[in-house]
Length: 280
Image 1: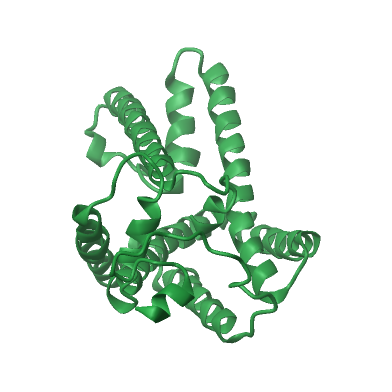
Image 2 (image 1 turned 180 degrees about the vertical axis):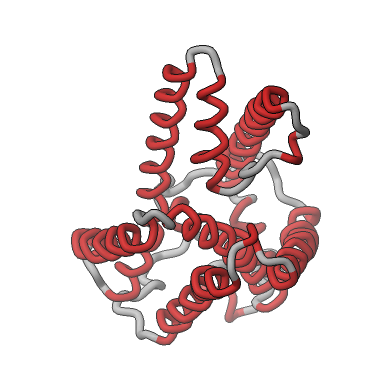
């Protein structure tokens, strides 16, 4: 999200932008969920079973196994098949670009790479890994395992760590709230700090703990243990190792080489200006 936000205008209203992104994304997901369960209900009715008894109703199997089967049962299935997989390909390409841009920006700032160097090195590495791991006859299963562990452990764990670090470890929510409220629009009050510093890490922490517990006690998808350990927990381990390694490396570019926008100081630790903070 930090990388995405860097493309906003210099004086953009972050609160309004965040609300638009959040509500638009959630609304689309709700609509997509209605469509998915409608399709699964059609498939279950055709087979004479309950929706819960269907195979491959979650993960990548939903898109590449269940939906092709559903489309083959529908009137005009080939037409909807072209539309569905064309949309899926477009969504995949745009998501790939945005995700790689986050990694590219991190390496450019940390190691001093140019955008061309980052594109060639990271894009080439991603292409090799994708071809080696996900293009084989068992690639779909490998992708399913990696996707499950990265989302349920990596993404949720990162969110919990970030909110706890900002809210509890560094105590920076006052400054972030002042920055958000520095533009006209929706005002973030005490409720915002309570949500970000307390409610969000508590809820996500519960999801993380229950998710990890389930992955440990119940082998995901009925896959063999070696596959889950290698491509599930192994992926998490590699991500942590890269994160620690990148943290230890010296910055090639000064990340503080910018002039922060002055914020009003009213006795609290709200200012981004180091001089004003030192005076107080």
